[in-house]
Length: 517
Image (tube, rainbow, N blue to C red; front, top):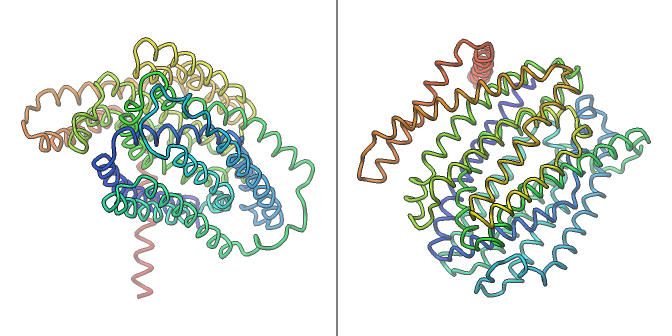
């Protein structure tokens, strides 16, 4: 099967699964805030961030071994795959043990993370359930990596999102029937273990040789390359965790637990929107890695240009939609008491856009294995983020924490990551990347201005119909502006050809099924 067909199938299954998962999760969140207080939401965000910090123990092992799997999977080198997965198993068993032990030993210090300790019973036991849930994935879930590296992420999507939907439905029943948060978490743990066991069974069925003992160990040179990548990725892991895993901790420490609960609703919506878009990248990363294993990196540059163009359009459009629709949607979904001021909403949408515009660069950096060259960048990024966030949080509260993320991205990731890809991957000047980046951003600003200009004329008293009309305006106006500015670009024409190929692939499959029937 072609790389395009693999990517299309991965995107299709991932998108369907994600939509079903988020429909069930939004219903579950509504039930959650009805039967439990906002402090429970804040607690969930805090403990999730603590466990994100504990994931530092992984230190990039998964990404390094995943990259090492691309070439042996492309050329069906089963013995090397066996050796790599044995190394993966041993590493993740050690990591899971460390996460479990360090996480449990951190229990006495939880109250230091909170400005005000909430009146929630069994606080420590709740935290232990989160720790066990996190550690179980290291012991059981590592084998999904071979599916993803082999361009079969759609299989992983079926299991992951299927269990997510089941988990949400069971949690809704638990909350309605018992209002017991501990049972709510027990359902989470059972579904996590069940999903990982199911993935293991499926991987063994597809790759029966993984049950066999690895006869030939990895060469010294191969181990050296993996070790070098793990060292580089460990810096990336530390930086990523300190940037993405500290917002809720800082909010709870410097503002209050309730603010973290409110922020969790915004990040949930952002994750839903960004998750659907992000499936494109997670679905094609293995295909790019497969392509790069067979060709030079320069040969994949046209794919990068198309992906960069698609990102500018999709992330610009969705950022505008988030900024415009966040509060109207949350007001209808949960109530006005769960809203942030529009200034905070703007910074949340801005961080989403900045993060989204990094996706093409990060996808190619991972696929090309360019981990070493910017290994110190995440440490600077994390330092800037923590310093700015703490200073501003003390002065201006919630928005200060979020501005810290914006500043750290613009001062580090914004220019270092594309420099690495263009200098060491494509071996091309960086000027063309930034000229397109700024052009795309200016068009996004114009699209946003046109959208909010149209929205300012909407005066409907009914909040539901006002939201529907606003959604219609957000769906049409930005895309019309993008079309006006982008329709002459070569990237636009090439993207249309790709969609035409996708349609052709679908038609051929339908025709074949009709003939067989």
